[in-house]
Length: 101
Image (cartoon, rainbow, N blue to C red):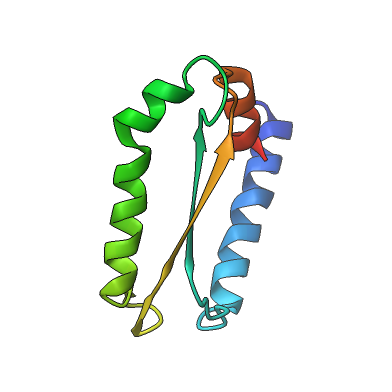
């Protein structure tokens, strides 16, 4: 490892250590859990995707929210789920761009 890479790595590690040691307990409270999914709502794979699992996820979110949400120990309470579906138009390139953003 070169000295330049070693210095960059050291600065990164020091920054992370300082960030987590200075900010304990200062976590902003959340009011929901957001789950995103890239799903073929249009394009050649849309019909098969609807049959294979879209409805199952919708039912799961409804059931979990009906029970009050998912308990998050960090906040000491249950948080509801918000499910966001993004149409990837059956295009893997669009799916990857959703993940990167």
